[in-house]
Image (tube, rainbow, N blue to C red; front, side, top):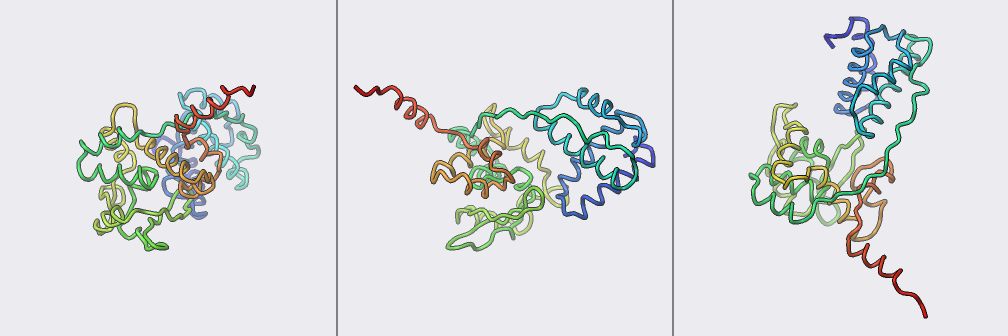
Length: 273
């Protein structure tokens, strides 16, 4: 916060304290803080002088994708709404920001050959991360902070207790061999310098390096979603497994097999006599 005037530093700190008090995840708070700090530095005005045009200009200065824009928009709206409630501003300049249009993306689940090739070249630590992402569908941040104690007995087997976005907890069924390997870690499965564990960004880079070009840690999550959905075609179940707040998000993760596409297309080729 060194680039901001003392008054704005205090305002930002007060808002972040409130986010923490409401149970927002640490990663979410850090992202929101980054958005607002960068906005205020760009505008270079006292908070009560920031206009809607200033905010729109800041958005225009960043080469973001739709998801990143939507996230930044949410941060800006939350911050200025808080400022209004706290009496720091008289008019909310973010109240009528334009909605960010997010085009529907095409799911890109990592294929089995990519996973097998990565497991063949990766060291033991990275290989374990790849297996967890592919078999449990965890986000890289969830894998980075995974502890041995997160494995619990569940029904007739095991599950991993995962604290996801927004602090929401879910149980993800886990195969016995993977549960045993996670448990053997003793503490953090992937130790590092970020509160005792590896950073999600660095873990993602390690996984991407092991995978063939074009495939990433996030594509392993798509793979999990697609395989889970293909079993029972239960989108709500997949939503729960992935920890999505909205089922629309889950739809963007589930790929359709080429076999299903060809079978559906072929059904239209038959014309009754």
